[in-house]
Amino acid sequence: MRLKGKTALITGGNSGIGLATARLFVAEGARVAITGRNRETLDAVVKELGTNVLAVQADATDPAALERAVAQTVERFGSLDIVFANAGIVGPTFVGKTSQEAFESILKTNVTGVFFTVQAAAEHLKAGASVILTSSVHSELGVPGYAAYAASKGALKAMVAVLASELAPRGIRVNAISPGATRTPIWDALAPNPEAYAKLEKGLSLTIPMGRLGEPEEIAKAVLFLASDDAAYVHGQDLFVDGGVNGAPGGTPLLRGPQ
Image (cartoon, rainbow, N blue to C red; front, side, top):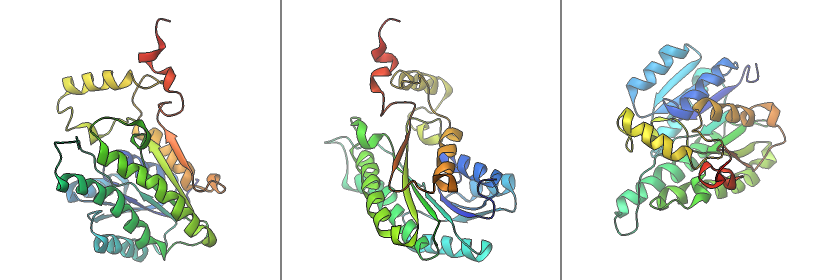
C-alpha cells in the first residue's frame, strides 16, 4: 500500500476527480478527509468508504471553514501528510456578457480558496508531505469564453512555483495536476441529458489525440503518484493528464486527416 499510515485532505472530495482520488487513497491505505458543500453527497462517501474517511461540510471560499476542516482532520487522524486542493468551479465568461460577480466568483473558489486551503494545512505538514493543486489544460488552450477559468488555472501553475520555493526548506513537495476533458459532473450544465452528453463527448473526443475523454480514476492515479513517496524527487511540476492535448496537439482526430 503506497499511502499506508498517511492522512490526506481532499477538497471537493465528494464528486468527480476528488471522489475518485478519495477511493484510491483509501484503497492504498490512507486515512482521508474530504470537504464539499453538499452534506448528502459527503455522507454517501463516508457510507461507501467507511471509517477511514471523515467528511467535513466546508465551502472552499471560506477560510474559516477550511481551517475548521483541517483542525477536524488532525483531531480525528492525528496528522496530515497530503493536501489535494482540488475544489473548483467552471463557468463561461465571454467578453461583453460577463458580470464582475460571475468573473470574481470563479477566481474566489479556484485561486483564493486553494491558497487558503494550503495555508490552513501548512502548519501541520512535516518533511515528506505532499501538496497537489488541480490546474487544467485550460491554462494553455485559449478556449473562447473561459477567460476566468483559464486565468484561475494559470494562476495555480504560478502559485505552485511560489509555494514549492517557499515550502522546500521544510521538505514539503508542491506540484500541480492538469487534467484534460474528464468524465465528471462538471459537464452537467452543458449536457443535461444523455443525448446532449453523447454529442458533447463526440465533439470533445475529436480534439483529444487519444480520441476519448479521460476517466476520473485515471486522473486519480496520477494524483496518487504525486502524493506518494514514488514522487519523492518531483517538486514544482505541472503534470498534464490530458490524453495528449497539451503535448501532442497535432495528433487530434480533427487534424490527422485520412488514414
